[in-house]
Image 1 (spheres, helix red, strand yellow):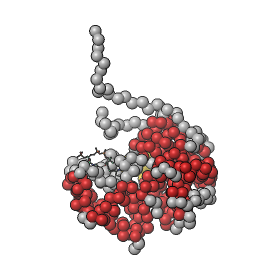
Image 2 (cartoon, rainbow, N blue to C red):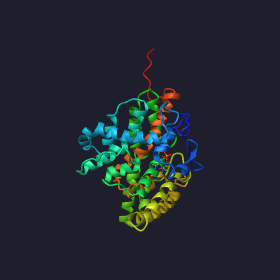
Image 3 (cartoon, helix red, strand yellow):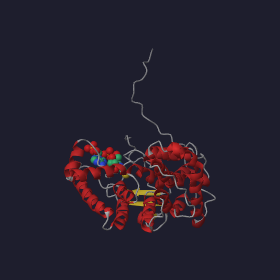
Image 4 (tube, rainbow, N blue to C red):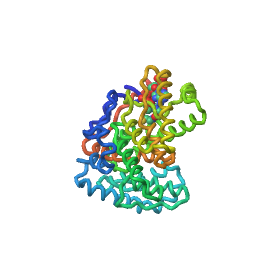
Length: 362
Ligand code: COA
């Protein structure tokens, strides 16, 4: 047994496979590059949910239902938005989601799948003193998320960039948040309970909380001026370099390249292009420093490094990056929760007691 359950197989799944040595992610039979930038998020939602809801409609009707679900979430939660906005943006989103019905039918699922995309822009706007903007049920999902944030229809390139991001992070094997989701679903609790477990796990900086600190790192290195020196000092103080390392990948995370290509397309001569060029230098310095500092471990760039640049370019503040991660991953959580509810068993592992025993009195 290891403390982190390394190499333990805790579920059988048809949903996704992470090949850590080959650097490949497969989602329901499709390699990630087949999906990212080619399939819309709504199509990937359908791919993930296929077989887990009897009334799952075809692509066109599902797009319509996803639009309706955004509207439904907004109408249900609008009265609570002002009070939720006093919390930090992640807790506010999570508290809003906790108010949704805890059922397990398709309507419940689509409400949960759209909730982070509706709540995050609405709460960000209220925090800035602006009114929340209602969803447009006929708009494209990612584009509508940006419209609700900025109050104007985004450029097709930006909407596509965010859509590609949501697809890229939609599912990823039995990561910590997906495992937490499956544990709760295995008790036959509802989908909201399962998603709340996933949200709790995703928040931590070793999982979905990393991209915000990536921005802080890039800013600190820019101010410091010497990337390698700054990174070496961090490691000497026992800190981890955010956006690097992975439990499963021993080679480069394939999602990092997908997202880097998206940032490059957005980049050009402007601030995004300048930021990307700087980040690439920091990435190379970090890989060099980590190779020397941790020679026994292959520590490579992970998804969060270029997530940070993409979400910054899309106009999200760094404190909301984990919310946007949740807006993509929630589809995977729902599919895993349904798979666990319908084909799995109560998850109940053992622990080994290493504490004192009571005195045995003769
Ligand atoms: N920076 C510095 N050292 C790192 C590191 C990083 N990003 N990632 C791993 N290491 C080191 C550990 O300090 C440890 O060194 P040691 O053996 O000298 O103590 C060694 O690599 C193994 O670490 P371990 O904690 O067993 O690896 P893990 O499989 O649990 O790590 C992560 C996976 C993701 C938790 C880890 O790589 C990390 O903390 N990364 C930074 C946060 C991040 O980007 N998270 C997003 C993941 S997608």
